Length: 104
Image 1: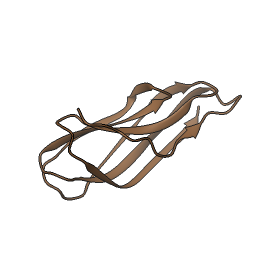
Image 2: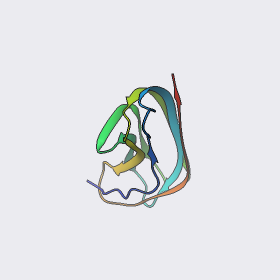
Image 3: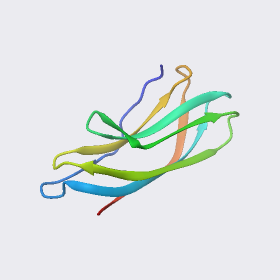
C-alpha cells in the first residue's frame, strides 16, 4: 500500500554464493500513529521471509526491531532492506539500520 525507496545495498561478488546466517536491526518512527510497517531483506527483487519483521507503531515515538535467520545467496545477488507500510501510504523515518551476514 505504501512505497519503498532503495538506499544502500551489498553485492554478493563472484565466489561468495552459499548459505549465510545473519540479520538486521532498525530503529524508526512513524509519521502518524497506528501504522503497521514490514521490514524485510531482499536479494535482487526476491524477498527473504527468513529475514523479516513486522510492527505496529502505536505512536510517533521511536520503535526498534530486529530479525535473524539463515538463507542462501548467489553470486551477483544484490542484498538490501525494504520497508513497506502495510496500512496505507504514510511515511516512516529510519533513524538507524544495520545489516550483517556471515557465511556458514
